[in-house]
Amino acid sequence: MTLKDLLVQLDAGEASHARLEVALALARAFEAHLAALCLVVEPYVPAVVGVNLPAEVLAQQRAQAEAAADEVLARAAERARNEGVSFETRRETVMVDRLPDALARHARHADLAIVGQPDPERGGVDDTLMVEAAFMASGRPALVIPYIGARTMPPERAICAWDGSREAARALNDALPLLKKAKETAVVVIDPEKLGDRVGAVPGADIGAHLARHGVNVTVKTLQSGGLDPGDVLLSTAADEGADLLVMGGYGHSRLRELILGGTTKNILEHMTIPVLFSH
Image 1 (cartoon, rainbow, N blue to C red):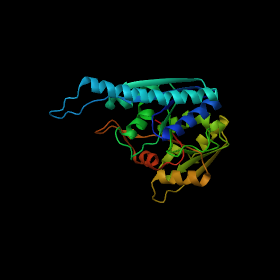
Image 2: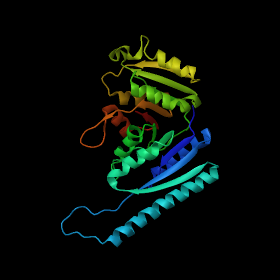
Image 3: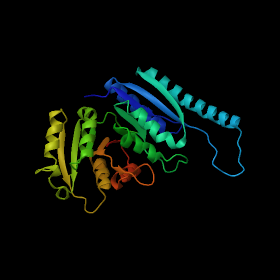
């Protein structure tokens, strides 16, 4: 089990550089192929009475946006050549409401998609929908990189959230290539008394043994939330342990928009300071 096909989503934003650096580091570590994807929004005119924008203006806007994306991809390709990484570029222009679907479609052909933490200060497309699609709609895991980037990748220390759920089991399995390279991995079980037999008679012992059989240097910790959101407990533990990676199952459910994340997942995305591997 390893990583041989990686996808990184790039754009013209400053945080895009951090994602590319992480993607290149992983590609080198696993001798993997890396695809860089830029998604361009198809220009459109909102339905306003009396507005009639000429088709040539829309075409010009599209050409400018595609040229800007090509510049981003060209710089990334140059970095990859300098690093000796197997690399390809992809650029696709889609309507704004189809962006999450397009990202998920590309992610399905990779072992891991590398995307950025949603930025609430950015206008335009809801970045959260894009991140959700990367692991909720793709059938693949996503590594979400915070605005500030990553300290070390592959990680030296990892924290894995374990509650005995299908999503958590999928996340730990998807993270195995990274966990096997880490020097230390801690499986964290929060409020085990509330989880019943899902985490076993000795909470976390079974999943810890499973990871150990795969060569992961693992310890198991049980923690009490004290009424705090589990996401806050995980982030605090990660900071205390000096972790470089958090691994957890991603939760969501259909509502008025495509996906609305569960509270803990949403909390993590908003306050993360280290990369988080989500899987569903």
